[in-house]
Image (cartoon, rainbow, N blue to C red; front, side, top):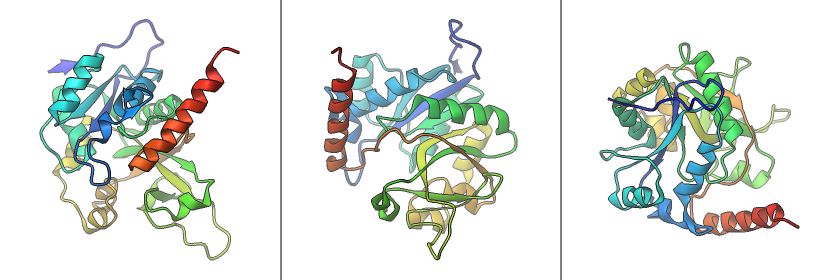
Length: 260
């Protein structure tokens, strides 16, 4: 079995591997992982963000598409060619069967602006709570009211112990008066190898199928998920129009970082 050796030039970190699931057949945006953003494919930007994390030992792209695998090779990005799977988490579970690590951080391949500090937060929480919960998931407060109404943005509510009560694409909690604020589920969660195999062994329940939210599979079968609060650094890319918005953000970022 393959294993990633920890980077000895950095402080001791958990033996956690970031896995970036990438598939070609997105309904709203076919070929999305190879869509160009700043002259590089979308997944390349996610990989660069993973490399900036201080709490993982490496990162790989997980895909069942040879076009994505070939591009990964050309760019020097490690990859695993997997079987076809219903969800990205099932794809990560296959990686866990082939690459040994103590934990796996699922970083969605359409999150080019994911905050490396958020990856660190999930990795650290998984190291602390991985024996008591099935998954650790990141979330952030929603500030744009349009995002509250958007079905593309998954909302989450949790209890005082930050264990998840529910995910939904609808605005939750319903606003009848005072509420604790709306939280966005980020495309970022950590699981151990055992938890990933449990996830893959479970049937898709009616809530997961209705909402198309993978983490609902664990909730429907009685498994706990713990949330950690993190910064939402930029939009995910779900559609071609999202890609145009991401290109604008990237250009602005490059102008601000350019020497004056």
